[in-house]
Length: 114
Length: 110
Figure 1 (cartoon, rainbow over the protein chains, first blue to last red):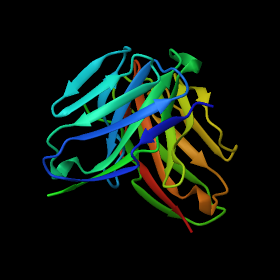
Figure 2 (figure 1 turned 45 degrees about the horizontal axis):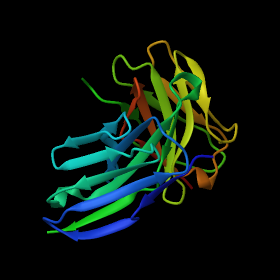
Figure 3 (figure 1 turned 120 degrees about the horizontal axis):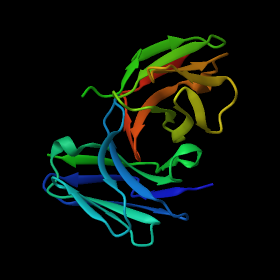
Figure 4 (figure 1 turned 120 degrees about the vertical axis):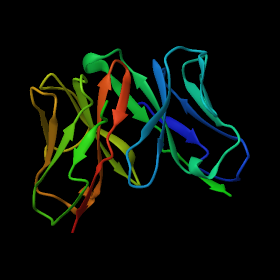
């Protein structure tokens, strides 16, 4: 089955630093999604990428859909304490209906030291 | 627009019991998916419902079942609970290609 390798598993950084995390897959995806999850809550969608090569920003967050369609990265610039949480990548295959499938990475735990 | 809502938020059950969890999708979303999240296995797909029909299914035993109503609200049922069923159960509604998650129901099986 499809597998997503997300790295790093965890990061401990100082406030103000930039952060980068990425996901790679052995399979091609049609869509890449990045979510953030805080304790006791469900994942919240940060950025959605729909086209190979696409680079999308959401405030201090920037994500790219790899040109091979097998990878994606998420960058966070000038981190702040509220960036703490677990970041998940998710790759979507299929085109809707019974073919639609969303595969999640294991997550990157981000800790920001004030 | 209100987000995905799930009830209850927390639940404690004992082995052998059954449980029903509820999910209300974002208004206008017809697809509802359920996921189990545990520290060891991460987010695992249970099933997806669309227009009251199960459209996709993950690799979970038959003790896990679900249904969707005509207003797109969905319920998930787990029968004969086991200790390993303790997890955060997440519901997500989808419009187009993007899923939006609810806050989850934290189930503890004792």
